[in-house]
Length: 558
Image (cartoon, rainbow, N blue to C red; front, side, top):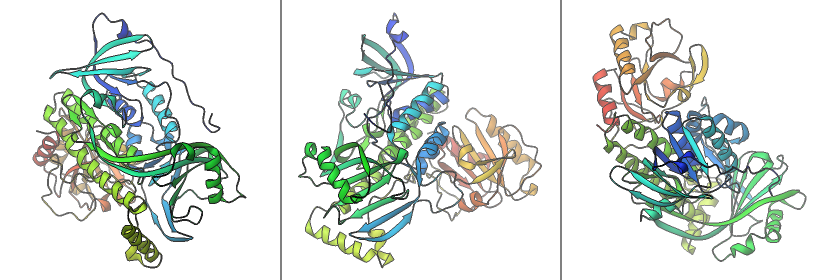
């Protein structure tokens, strides 16, 4: 029994599909009601696509599990209608500190720029996130979440996917056009398809201890120790979560006995050695884990798509699991919707696997490097690591070599076949394949943020300095873009309010701090095109409708 959280119990409800005379068919079925499966389902439902979510559990995840959610995760969550609730409950942090033995050797800030809506990270127990997602799913008429529904068989043809589902009242059959496997690291759907995930198992064990204690003991920061005096020769990580709950990770080594280490009589002395006898705490939850860095060869098999841990796994260092998983869902859903609507060829769906395997490889590389630095496997590597740590306290050149977990940032899909190459020079970090930047804007007199307004469709950003930059013929062409089958909604970005007569689908956004223009290296006439997942897909120094049409067609796989 948890002191800080009461687990909801979700009832099994008999579906009308179980009484149907023939196999019920749905456009999309998602297997797995974890964060990734529910994110995908919410996205589909917001588009108005009927989606069924199947899960064999009757509650949310047990234990804090994933706790660190990066800015990109929060930006996507905002688009799904649950970002603010997560931020309100979670613990916001941007600062991390790294210690070697008794000394702090340096610190870092995960949000180097001001004027973003969301922080670098929040910490929030996974069960809260899942609870909020369940609530959001239940708000959407197009989503049907079914508990205690276990998929036991998967078959597909060229045109359809068929499922057998086991329930407390017996099995029934379903079919769908597209199936999303978001059922975790031991994915049953992956097994049913005869597929596997390949990679490296790390021979190490870590103890997670969630403890309740006074929040005044430590600030809301990420603290990582190499060779701390309270845990000789190993490493320790400390994070604050909601409800005055603190996550402590202890490196135990491969020879540790998991069952023994999980016993409170063994955990409590470790925690006391860390906190000191004078600090009162209460142990809430503990687990011992090992981890794997691996992925499937491809994330698509016909009409079946794999996302999150079902597709790829990383070590927990860097918080790249849930953060990369939600990017999978964000990448996939708009593409399936475009194909369903006849606005893109089915071949567009191949780009999901192309883009997200690239991202998975980057995350696995970073995760593997972090693990090798944190837990060196031989004497030479350990000597190198300790030398780097000693130098880092006084010499800035050594600090980039310190790897306590390269924290999650979205991979930049520079090699994506959906991007249009630059025809002009730009001097900024935001390139085709990167998420668009954020910044405060005024829209219809209301304060908001740029990323809050982007997404769910293609968007254009046209930068002007004055009325003179906005030719009436350009406005007419922007109106055409807004009215086409796959619309492009454009924001005219200016530094101040203007009295403009703009058509539907074109709005004035006042860049109140000038940061959107600065971060995109924009000049009068610069135009950016973003995808429905907020990634930049093309940019040009002068608006050209033919070039925008070509870029959009390329982004749609045409």
